[in-house]
Length: 393
Image (cartoon, helix red, strand yellow):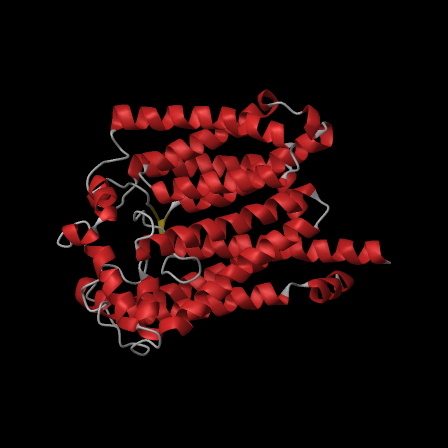
């Protein structure tokens, strides 16, 4: 055990760890700064209400990180572990459908209340699950066949399960998570080493099923354009026409970004957080960062998130283990897509979908699952370094 810990300490990915730590601490500071008015006026609580709750979330997230960092990633290919993770997924999705809650303005039903924990968002778990499940499924197939002989019909179950997960998230009307799940699936399969022709066959089958499921949702349930979601899409083209309605958030995000300029107003000096920008501690926290800290705050966030994405893909490119490669690529893709969707929505680059900014936004489910993913990535990085050092001796 002592020898294992010594080797672990020598190969621990300290740059990745300290980047995650820096972003989490920076996010904690910005959550306190951005949420004071919401805590006092809307929640009728002390000014540090969200700050204290996020501290608890970070404590739990730290435990999740440590547990994942010490748990050998190769065990995720074990059938019993994947069965357990699948059962958890089924329970969560059934629970959210039966007793879920969410934002009424878009018909959302994305959260479940867990006694003793608070609200939990199953779609966040689904992102990590798809990474691990696809990586394990393709890894096991690679042990039996060469990918040149692999046909789409031989991996029907991963396709089918992915479609069920995407359909379940789409029923919650969490379209941001749907996009992220698609990006994750593409990245993991692309990293598997599957030939280009087989890759396109695979996603041809997957895409056909996906379009059919989404078409059924649109036609029979009307979930995709329910409530104010249609207005959000329309307001994307000119949010100022909808400033008093569904364009309110984006317009005030523009005011925050423009008001900060290059240097920012100063930490704690945001105007838009004083009741103008709804929920500034979650989806639009980057607008407050820009308003208060200007270009320097932006560089901290984008630099940190960009480094994590870079590390994930660089680990995937270096390792010779296909399981490690797929897991690392999937996690890097998750961080990259979620950051792009959040920042794109806050700046009006893409329609607003409502996802958190990794490690910065307030949210227990998000920070815990992301920390769990970072622990897995650190473990993959450590084993990659060990294998590389062995090959050089």
